[in-house]
Each structure stands twice: as C-alpha cells, then as structure tokens.
Length: 152
Image (cartoon, one colour):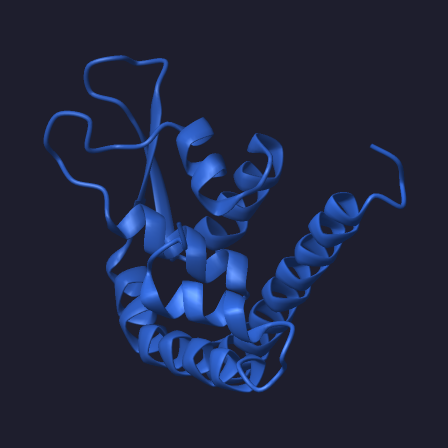
C-alpha cells in the first residue's frame, strides 16, 4: 500500500470525519454544560460513571477503570477527582476490605448536580447530532450513533 492508495485515503477520510463529529459534539455539549451547570464534559462524564457504581461485588471501580471510562490518563483522572472533591461533588474513602484501595463516590450534591445536568447533556447531544446530520460527510456516522448499530 502506498500513501496514495484509495483504501488508505478512504480510511484517513473516515477517521477525519469521525474526529470532526466527536469534536463538534463535545464542543456543543461543553458549552451547554458550562453555561447551565458549571461543568465540563469530562466532569459530567466522571460524575456519570461514578454514579453508576454499586455496593455489590465488583460495584466500585478502580481508578484505572474510571480513567478508561472517561478516556483520560490515571493522573488526569486523579486531578479531575480532586477538583470535584474540592467542590464537594465527590468523596474518597478507604476500601473496607483492602486498606490500600481508595474508592470515590458521588456525594448527594454531586448526584443532584448530575440529575440537573443530565437533561442539558442529552438535549445538547441531540442538537449536535441533528446539526451534524446535515453535513453529508458526517451523516452516515450520525446514523450509526443514533441507531446504536454498527453497519455490517
């Protein structure tokens, strides 16, 4: 394969379209969450991921799992957790069965803010997808996101 190979060109164009769609959606949601709730997309995502934890077996996520879920490095995730903890939206505590482990939970204030922000996030996502669907290069990707299916 060469750099001018049509398959590579199509692959690069597809990647560019996916990157563009992601950037447009994230920027639109970021503006809405910041304006309405003082949250970034990453902060919202972290609150959302941590709010889904439970007390049962395997119910609490390790920091690496949280970092993977919010697509950040472990150090960036730790800094994000610290910022939200300083705002009273998260709290950390020692694992009761392994004193080396530290869990992070969403506080009542964090759950309240998340509940208030969820409709904003959902509406902004819908708006961003509707706008992107008008762009011919992005329309097929929007269809995949909206359908929840990957074309065969």
